[in-house]
Image 1 (cartoon, helix red, strand yellow):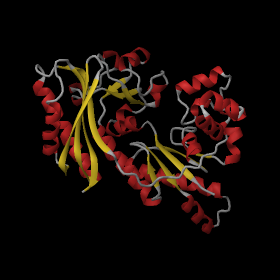
Image 2 (image 1 turned 135 degrees about the vertical axis):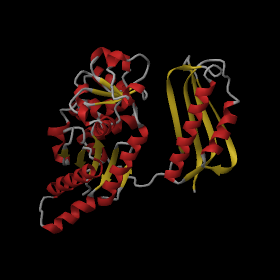
Image 3 (image 1 turned 180 degrees about the vertical axis):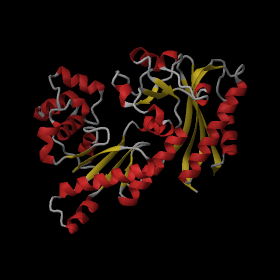
Image 4 (image 1 turned 120 degrees about the vertical axis):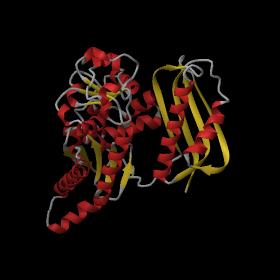
Length: 370
């Protein structure tokens, strides 16, 4: 029997900000936009004061109660929660805390699959089996103890809370980690699926997006239970043989994927979207400063990951939302900011700069270990 955990940090970016500003705890708080002088002066603007086209990175649970969610435009969010406080995102700090919580988990359970800045899968089978030596007869009770130990390790390392789901597979664990947020531990056996999973909306399954959910709704399939009871032939006809078969298996809680503990990065990138469009000539000095900053941060990412890369690329998005990319392959891998900036600058010379720019990015690929 396998015991797979999914650990998901609770409102991660917002929780990191609350470590820095504990006086804001309990208030509706939205993370998004850019650093402002008002924040540095100790004053936090409300959403009603915001003008621009930024989007929400995350929000505290108090803000989410107003219908505010990640990815929503800040101007739209201002209509729902005008008095919510707005803090700029600080991704350097989020990455630092991300490394800390993953290191804390890895010290107890080394079999980790990294799924992003705020979530991981963990194969805790060995830890649960070792718990049997202490005389605990029920393996699922031991799995709960393991999850609580992991939560404690994360909190001691970072001061942050997380939610954990422990089940026989990755699909159910992802689902379970959302059931008792924030700070929850949910343990699900395969025999618990009809009672605990089937009443949930079909879109809760990781892998069923908005379009598929709408199509299922049109077929009268609203819950995961409805999906489990649907004829496999119907699902295959409506969604294709492969995806339809996956839906049928997922609805019954079946998933054979392993926890992948190693994965090689294919590329490393940094990009930024401007609050207002910048002109290549009139805003040249500011653009140059931002461009150099991206290269410096990218070099730092490569240093931490132990990579160098031969192909340097840039990405521009214009004010009409057209996106262009250019890249340059070098004779030898590079990792320092100056070399990246030089190659990226050559790419930039091959891009038309008549229109205003809304996004700028730099990428390093064709990676090799240093």
